[in-house]
Every structure is written in C-alpha cells, then in structure tokens.
Image (tube, rainbow, N blue to C red):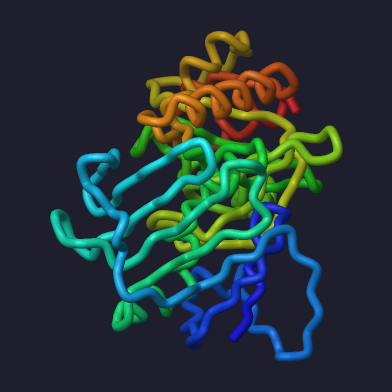
Length: 286
C-alpha cells in the first residue's frame, strides 16, 4: 500500500507492502493513498523484504544502542536492532548525492517493528531527512502567533513547554510542537515546522511559520531579557541540535546551517520565572 508522509514541507511517497497503523502522533503527517492517486513527491521511500543482511559487519560500523551506521562515498546505511547486541532487522539506505529514493530493507517477520506510522519517522531519522535538505532538528517548543514562529530552546527541564503554555494563555498563541522543531530555509525565509517528535507534550501539529525569534531559556529569580550575539547563540543552541557527532560531514553541514540561521534570526536570552511578565518581555521585542 502507498502512503504520503508529509513533513517539514516535504512530501515522501512511501511504498509499503503491508498496512500501517496510523497512531495519534502520525495522523497529521501520514495519509493512505488510493491505488490510482497520482502524487508528486520530493522523495520515495520503498520498503523491500530481504532474506539477510549479508554485508553487515559490526566492526565496520559506528554504533549507538540499537543502531549501527555505515557510510562510504556512494551511500549511507542505518541498521536497526530490536535490542542491544541483537542482529539488525532493518536497514535504511540513503544515496549520498541528494537522494530522491530511499530504501528500507527488512527481514521477513520484522513487520511488527515497522507497521506503525511513527516508525517511519523513527527509521528515517528526521535529522537525516533535514540534513539531506540543509535543515536541522532543534530541541525546542514552537509556538505560532500572527503567522510568525517563536522557538523556546534550552536543556530539558528548563521550562520550554511552560513558556509555550504561557504564550497560549496570555497571547492566544498556538502551540505547534512541544519538543522538536524542524527548521529549513525555504524561499529565503527561515521556517519552523511541527514534527511527530513532541516528547511528553503530546502536541503534534503539521503546521509551519516563519521564525520571528529564538528564545534561549534560563530559570531565574526574576525576569530579564537581552539579545545574544550569533557566536554566543551558537554555543547555546548547538547542544540542542540533533547531530550525528560521529559523522564529520553531518557535523559540518549542521553547524553551517545553524550559523546561517543565526545570521538572519535574532536570538535572545530570557532569564525568567513562569509568569506573565516573562511573556511580556518577549512580546515587547517582537
């Protein structure tokens, strides 16, 4: 069956030989297609059953928990395991040169790891997809007000979701995503997109907005705001970008994207309490 996976302004045609269960976080991103639907897509993701991964060699891969990564001059392979130290059940192959077609090979019987909508995001790796399109995935809460985007970023627990909620309460802003925003420069405008990766917030909206400002959060005993230099902002935001640190090209491209973003979009440090005054301080600068 074919599905359309719509994310970060991209359309991906998924050719899957079994049915997907479209879970709650995927309902705005994945759509079944009728057999005669003609859809123009930016990419095609084709699922292919295989008997074995005969070329898989652990010693040639970089590994993290349940994933193994291999890359040469022509392609990148991401292997997925059900548990640490187990053999892979799937392998996603990305051609290196601006891919138009991606392949997901899987073992017979592994459909149980693949048949939910959220598994498309998990196996593609949204950070991979954005990297191939010169974008980044930023750990941030994303709200939209008057068609402009505000991103609240910082380490886990600093209050990103709280500030987003305050903007909804006091400014009638719409919370697009509570944990991860996809960012791309489209038609000369830095644009934030909602994603299916929303952490505990449960907010998964497939909407976008031009980024007006990025707010770095710090908890404090009183409310203060100041503009950050691009260099200072880079140091603060780099740890919040989903980056494959083992891949030098990935690191270089993501760093360049972040630098370009910060050259165009203002970043402010907000030391704050969870109150209306914090909202007003940001509102005054935008």
